[in-house]
Length: 279
Image (cartoon, rainbow, N blue to C red):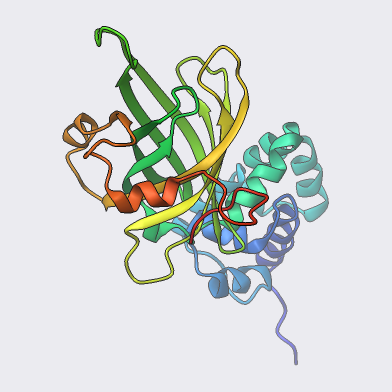
């Protein structure tokens, strides 16, 4: 004789399945809850009922009370339609963010090895013949990856008294074996930059090479692109001391290693018709 299901347990099972539809996937829910997918499936198919601590965790995430989870499914579905889960409501109210959110989800866990500090080298777009060396941090917050790029320099051919500071904040993505950084200038908020990097295929990640596209740092605001190199410094460094070594340097400066200079050289070679990153 088949064992009858507990009515409240059956309500919970059906209600949990219903509210999960408001999210992009069960895998996404499990990641946000830091919960084993196999165990969560047991709740979905009614083979297990969550402990009080787990129930509290589920309630906090979905934005419902325990008593509501045990309601008749018809009443629960009406409740949820009126009061959609907080996170899903936030996403659906901002549909233009769904695309970015989807890409950020796909990047989860794929960039952990790249978290840390880097020197960033590229030829200046506003001061020909000079190289910008700045400090970049790639870090994770709640499983998503972000960047902060800080730099400073004295204006060339000036008295040396005026120092320019800049700070870019960005989102870092990992898509089809490439690293993307979408950044905006935080101080003036007047430009956006996109950088695409080769990932490090070996066990070390000393250098990430790529191409970045932004605006020339002058009144012309000319769209410009150039090669860029990220030199890995470590996860934990003296950032203030590292920042002291940043600045704007002549291409002949001894402060720029030859191997860096070769990798950020933007001059066309041979039959090149486009600017490509150097692997």
